[in-house]
Image (tube, rainbow, N blue to C red; front, side):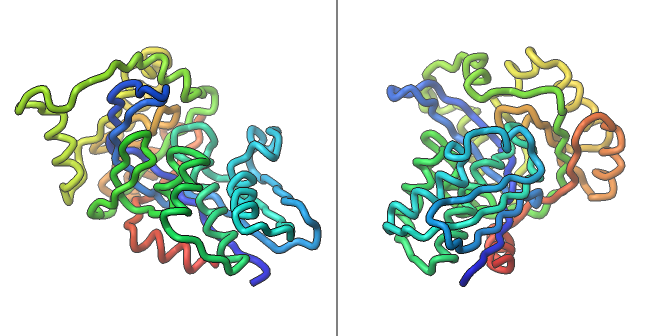
Length: 300
């Protein structure tokens, strides 16, 4: 195989609980990831040159960063080192997922690069080792090797598949002028260690468990909403507008700054998108785990 093309799908967090700071300085998370159809495109091609060549199209924010810091570059470099491969590779990343908006674009790109490079070279790696490499690149990366709906615990890097929910129609609104650096969002949150089993009436825990196993998957929640909305009131306004325009639910995407709403139909989502003329909007849908895997295979 001389060339591989893969989509790299975005995610939203249906639930995101920050339980407190860990001894290692990271935060303990409990989250439900959900793949959505919004995606970047990744093309990998065997090169006659010995190095990794990465071209980013469609996102000036990322194209200006040092190439060796990009997660796609680091993912391919990790596998080249793992297999001691000297042959080079040309990579073109076409960005559609807005960067640094809580949609997991960079992590998804990294996971697609891992899968794509294995396909390109015909190499195989035990699943546990692949997950280990993915986690070393970023806490969200292991989820994107799985897709669909999944539970993330610890730093969000320990992943457990969950039953798929019925397809939902999603409108993502990404305000161009607002960026929320993740470290800043955690500082605003001021999370403190919090017990999970203080009493048998821990409604927060029961609610989370119910959402994990519910076929409806309703009940969006995000611990970052309060502190992020206080510093960026426009994001709270976007959430209210989504609800007023027909969204059954709406919440912040990850630590922000995108906000998404769940709509009963794609037509209603498209009509709602017209109400955000100054923002990037994306009408998409949730992806089941089987469809996620099928689309990845079909794109090769």
